Image (tube, chains in turn brown, red, purple):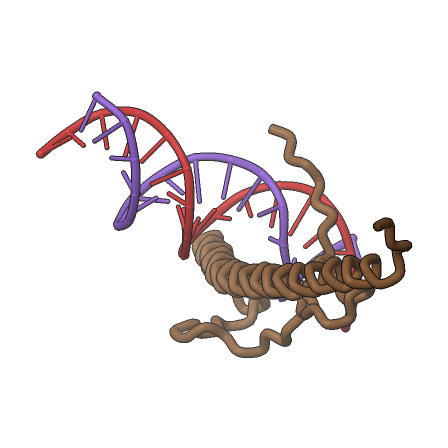
Length: 113
DNA sequence: ACAGTGTTGCGTCAAACGAA
DNA sequence: TTCGTTTGACGCAACACTGT
């Protein structure tokens, strides 16, 4: 199955200036609770040990990705919220400008009695 | 009460990308 | 080149609604 290539940077700040950056690269130094680093790969030799190391690496990767996905979804939700509130603000602004335009039209349009 | 449908959140995979 | 991070896409389960 062919998946479409994504091209989202999420960086909307270039034009609006006040939206949060969607893609934030946070330092991930802390390991999730319960994760213990194993001995260095250099000390592993037997197929059994190599298999265990591969399994451990996979589980660690899955755990990290699980957390990353949660964080990603949280950021996305926040981003969408921001967009929605910006829409609300712009709608109000737009309404005011339309009203102002109507007022000015009334003032400056030639009267026909 | 039940089945069908929509929504939401999760875990996982894979692709893109940047840093070392 | 390799490795870690980010995120769209997918499938699944749980829950909420709705029509019968």
